[in-house]
Length: 181
Image 1 (cartoon, rainbow, N blue to C red):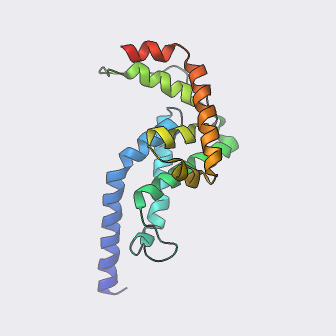
Image 2 (image 1 turned 90 degrees about the horizontal axis):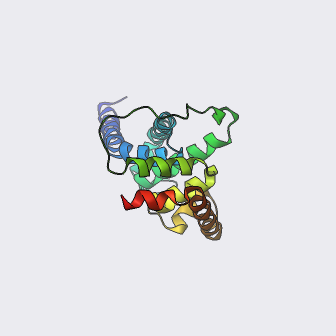
Image 3 (image 1 turned 60 degrees about the vertical axis):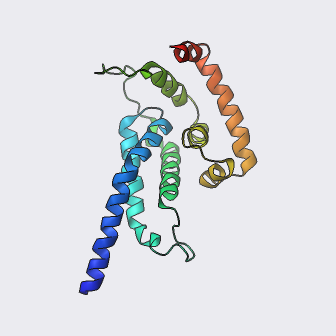
């Protein structure tokens, strides 16, 4: 390897490390909600996503070429959601952690609301969770969500409406009580 290609590779690795450091928090938060509050699985999904991003990072240098990555942040979110959905299809994903949450230090104003919402999301099917997280947590458009999920926009709208209805049934009156606090 020549000196210039070595320095170009180091520069590309430095860019990736900066990207990973800047995006890992957002990726983790999305993964946390996708997994229904399973922090360990969320960490695994983020690591897998960043690993896949690293192998394709060279495609971010010239986004004007076909097959290149124009928006690495959006691509990372897409990879994360697809990793989650792939994990849900595996048989080995049936293991569940203990139902009781450990005691936590510190007081968050909306901790009970967050726990209630996370538990309700965990009861929804994986694709419903993915649609809700993409549409309402990440604030993506119907079209962007459809692209990530490899579905059409009408299917995303329908799944969104039905998933929200299921979520309302699961939450019942508990959401109104928690939101008032």
